[in-house]
Length: 245
Image (cartoon, rainbow, N blue to C red; front, side, top):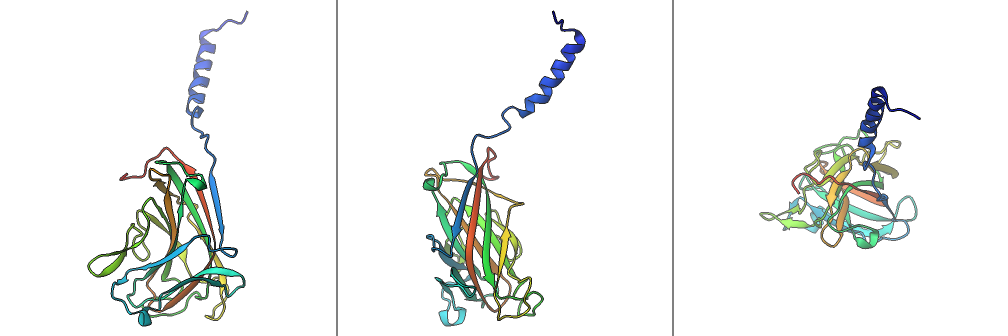
């Protein structure tokens, strides 16, 4: 008969202590992956603009948003503005719901990957900043809908996106709109950016809803026109609660 000596008791205890952290460290929930192919449909995405006067003149700011032909073929969500305020934030947004697999009052780590067509060359000179590197791309998520809010006759976003090159509580800076190949303004090319290395923790509301958005915070005092062609979203349930919640 096998006899448990003090030596073997020590071995078993060591193995038990080693295995203990592994118990319960996994999760039964699978990641929720959603792909929005904007070449096929607008998929219910909407557009918006903030960081400009409430009484702005359309002829001056040239705000434009719509589902239209892409300069690279196919369809895309086009959004455009002339940055007269030296701070315009133009964005697209979409609500995710329980129908997408989300659970009520649940915290998720959210990763967003965006693909868009830009004509801004790298290293170009522009008023206020370069047309590529000074137009900062952000992705964000929140249980609250991102909408323009009147703050002393100035539109600001209802969630914290940060300012210019800085992110906020609800948004991460993932890059800029500068192209990587062509050095002219005539040619559009696709750029892909993601916050995969820095997911955003968001808790859904009581109905299992959250909003995701992507946009540009611009320091370039000129016209920026982008064509969003695809958005990929990944949500992983976590037990961690976002700070301040």
